[in-house]
Length: 277
Ligand SMILES: C[S@@+](CC[C@H](N)C(=O)[O-])C[C@H]1O[C@@H](n2cnc3c(N)ncnc32)[C@H](O)[C@@H]1O
Image 1 (cartoon, rainbow, N blue to C red):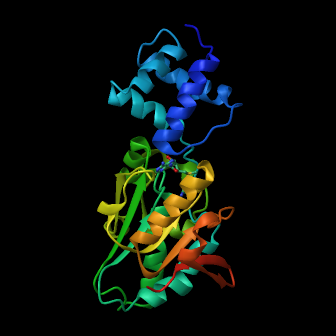
Image 2: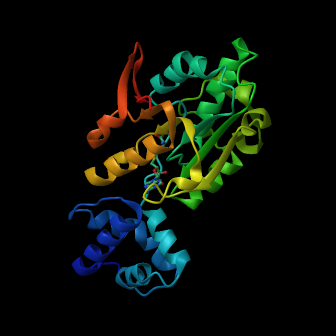
């Protein structure tokens, strides 16, 4: 098999990836594209990477196109990533929502394999331990991601010891997980019941998602160009309730969408609140 990737094929794929997922690669990432696509060359029985790219961009086979887009995503995640967003959720945002006369809805907008959404759910469970009367109208946590593969893993909610050891204390493992074979553990049904996952592309229309009280959109905007970042943040603002909360990744900012939000500084870090309408 010829594994080289021609410059022409690389450029076509780069534009296609940008258009379909927002993910922006510069001219120097040929090695990355090649290494991520070679397994698909085998899987879809192509003679070489250029032919695979031809099939991907032609969009005649949805499974080939989707597999290539998914192969280009970076799904790195861990439990309670950066810690402070979950402190803010527990100490500031959840107390404000505790007496809401309607269901509380929280969105993990690039949920990868589910650690962020389940960390939110465990934070809710911790809050409820001291506030048993909170959220009388229910709580719903929705995780979405471009990649159907990670959505499947998140939906199952079973993790191996390597991923469990990235940010999860022994106490939380005991409290919120059940043990399986081979040191794997599955999130308990009482946590699982609040959380659902589905495939969703942040470049698409947000209308069907409904309104949220809190959005976690963390470590995904970094892959987008500034126009798309601004558009996604505007769309998030439109699907947040008035004064709803937005938590970004530690290295991410509001870029062009500052007029929709105010920055709230807390002892542990900062988050954004949608301006009152
Ligand atoms: C680095 S992970 C971040 C996971 C989690 N939010 C965290 O902070 O730990 C980025 C995720 O964004 C997803 N992603 C990339 N482009 C996307 C898009 N256009 N729409 C939805 N999700 C996307 C990837 O599939 C990947 O799972």
